[in-house]
Length: 253
Image (cartoon, rainbow, N blue to C red; front, side, top):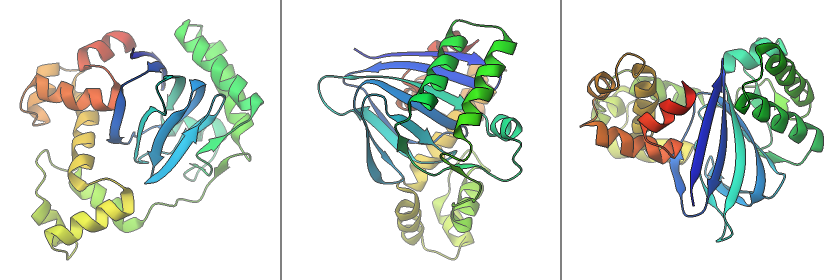
């Protein structure tokens, strides 16, 4: 059984998920993601390295970190996640530099308590003041425990991602030439550094762009983001969010 339920509060999205035979394809998010494994073992690769989050494990994902995800065994998996816009985290922590979570998985009852409380408040649509206070408590518990302010993403990779994000059609030969590489040199370098191919990164970027475009019209998003049709968009979207675009939007609107 696979169930994915999303709820949005301002610049935070909460996810409650139950998984058995579903698996996320390699992807990344523009937000920070913080979650708790409630039952089972979360099995995933983060930047190419295997991670196992057991029950009560707290998972951290920095923006643009490549990862997949699945249940480790037949017993299945239950977990919750918070997706936090970077600007909100910087505002709450009063930091100017990019914050990075330094450990992918930790076990800490206090931080776990704050995450679960905020997830619960968002799903129960508690008022803004209450959610703000719970979010503040969470950020206070994180600062100094699992955060640094040193960016660790390679500048060249960042430029490559920016180059591939400027168009709806990926021309690998052209992008590779921009960086003085052959097509296969570029694919190999990008895959080695990020754990994902340039094409898969490009598809993930288009999915996120389509999610923003849908506020105008979902079929306009299909056209403007150069998907073949809505079925094509849904297939890519479900690999990242577990739901079709329409089902996802019904939950967060």
